[in-house]
Amino acid sequence: MSTPTTPSVHNRANPYKARLTENYSLTSEGSAKDTRHIVVHLGESGITYTPGDSLAVIPRNFPKVVDELLAALKLDGATPVDQPTGAVPLRDLLITQYSLNRVSKKFVKAVLEKLPEGDKKTQLADIVANDEAFDDYVFTRDYTDVLTEYPVAFTVAEFLPLTNKIAPRLYSIASSPKAHPGEVHLTVAVVTYTTHGRQKFGLASGFLGYGQELEKNELPVYIQPTKHFHMPAHDANIIMVGPGTGIAPFRAFLEHRAIEGATGKSWLFFGDQKKATDFLYEKEFDAMLAKGTLTRLDTAFSRDQAHKIYVQDRMHEAGAEMWKWLKEGAYFYVCGDAKRMARDVHQKLIDIAQEHGGLSPEAAKEYIEVTLAKTEKRYLKDVY
Image 1 (tube, one colour):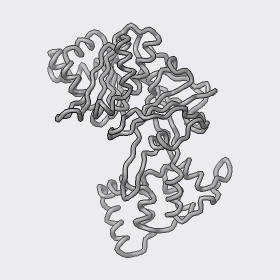
Image 2: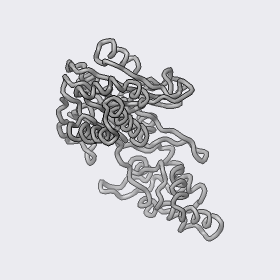
Image 3: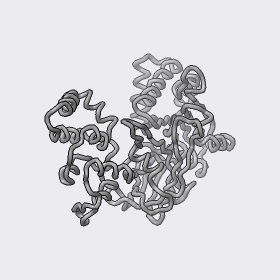
Image 4: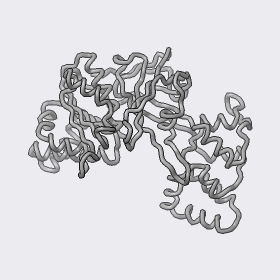
């Protein structure tokens, strides 16, 4: 059974300046994805964690993004800006404090107010007046995109309140502290896309993947302890469903259980696009299977055949065995995409309870959503 993480002096208000020691690709050439293994060294921080916890990372903007914005704003990056700790150059402040990867609606509205009467003002006013069009507009644009379309000037004092402060991003920890003392491992899918003629990155994933040099003590982090996503007792069986980067906490679980000599069985479902390019940690899981740390591994590679196969399809195929495990007390974990994958997995659990448990639709729903999830607390989610 996991023990709760000891509170740390490092938190959102006082992050620890850690360093990256490793950053390498988990996906192979030809993959449609760029998923990376990131190792964060905790140095002398005294930070501890438990499998199931998350690492909060406070990212920064790429200097190139800030320089493009300063040029579009016609502002001098050396301009001092008063802060509680003293004056800070505007460029440094924008790199470390403000989220610039997606434009705010309040900024677009301020641009509209500054535009002179004419076609451009009418065009932007029509967008702002239509909620759906406005959502679409800001979704694909950053501040520089908007200023390129609608060039207007802002002072520093005008601009900063129209942006949002950088918020920490939480990443499920992919390592056991007993397997990797003093380190936190992350499984990071780098978000990259091109809109309006410019390549862009997700703020946190881009920063971790390509914005932070190795061996520099400057990565602000702290542990976000889990409230519920803990491992069970060593003799309990576990079923884990973690496609894509949802695999992260289950790598941690399996490493930890191996070191602690857990006797419970473990069953992992992993899915991604193609086995040849996207099977994250394949060699590690093969070794765990060989040693018996991992009892069973079911994989679903959606694009390796004409029809898409997902983890919930593999669950369906193994429904009788899964129902047997659940009735014998297994814990069921799911990690990853909340909108589609976790919803589909949830429905498949209900289907399995009907088909293999002989329950009515109402009773199956009651069993999964109340008995398993709330009463017995054996159905645990880490979804986002």
